[in-house]
Amino acid sequence: MTFTGIILLAGFLIFTVVMVMRLLPTLLALPLLAAWIAFVAGMPFVSWLNDVLLGGALRLASPIALVIFGAMFARVIQKVGISDAIIKKAAELSGDQPVSIAFLLTAATVFVFSGMSGLGPVIMIGSITLPLMTGVGIPPVDAAALFLLAICTGGMANIAGYGTYIGIFGSEAALQYYLPGVAIAALVTCFYIIKNISSGNGGKNTLPAAIKEILSGILTLPITLVQALAGIFTSHPGGLIRKKKELPAAALIAPILPLAVIVILRLTHGFGLPLMDQIDPVAAALFGFITASLYATLTVCPGKTVNTLTGAFVEGIRDVAGVLFLFIGIGMLIAASIHPASIAILQPLIGSILPSGQNGLLLFFAVFAPAALYRGPLNMYGMGAGIAAILTGLSFVPPIALCGMFIAVGYLQGLADPTNSHNTWIGGYTGVDTDIILKRILPYAWVMCLLMLAYVWLTQ
Image (tube, rainbow, N blue to C red; front, side):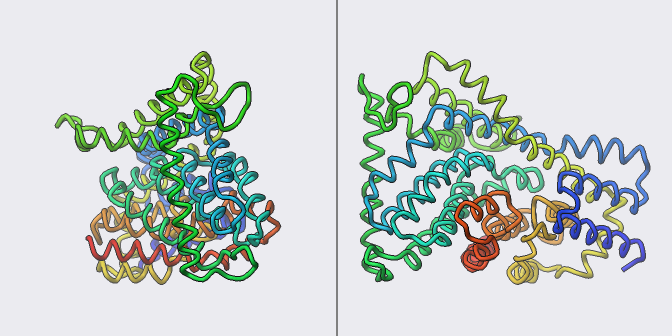
């Protein structure tokens, strides 16, 4: 390890510490770290301006567009009342049994967050679901954990959440883990309900009783879907909530329309290069968000479609302004990390720290997965983005395998990191310290991570 490499590593550690201690916002720390890497690597000033400052700011342009249109759609289903109606309908169907209400509210939250993201929706949905859970006897720490698990599962089903991975590893690599990622999160969430949620008499559920209640809850979902679809063909659709007028049942399928559009486009045109008459997956996702937004507004408030969409677009950009600047910083960090001047220094540095083989790297990620917590070095919204870019540039392992590894540790960051704004709000709202929530949910997040790493090992 050269002296220059040591100086570069010291910069990584210093910026990690200041982010963990919240002495410097991540929004500022990432561009500054990119400038530090360029300076230590001896990058010419002109190269820093062109390749890092400008090139980095534009590097994640596709994911940035994905986030903007996703935020617009999130605002649409919030403004027209769809998300609120789904949660309330789930509460009506679940009765007063803790396992039933836990399952249905969790499923409804997953459904909502497959089309929404951000702290605003967390506060809006959490203000409804958390009191309903605790009101039937579910302990606050379990209600908090279930809500986080639902957000995580919904986030894995929300194509807009893959922006960082698409920007670093490419859309084909990132979307290869879409269905496995959702399945793993859903499986562990169901296991949490079976294991931890008390039955109505105050005791713990036996496995058969819990499974019976969950199956009962599952069987009600097709009924709700049929009712929603039937509303499309009725002249007087049934409503769930009343604001200025009844909300059509058909509107409830809006959150899954972006995914449906993506699947249809993939089956009809295929994903790949535009030169081969194929569609970029990000373009398919953008079209999905636009289509779903139009469907939601035309179904609920056709006379206010233009105003609703315009307002949602403006408010959506405001909602994700911090995320957009974060993506710009991540792009700068990636651009600085993969510059030839930086690679010459980082290659021996990374080689002396990380195992070079794929199996060794999988084991490293399995053991050190908690390094994604507290804005640590495996956090993809911080140092992890730079490390991912470096590893991709060094070709230690295939980019597809690396993508799966970082998605795996992302479970811990998204679920258990006490520095997340949504973890902080949930802890404050439920009156449970974020460190207690961390201890409760960390084993389940780690299991998700291990299952994803196992999937990478089996498929790559």
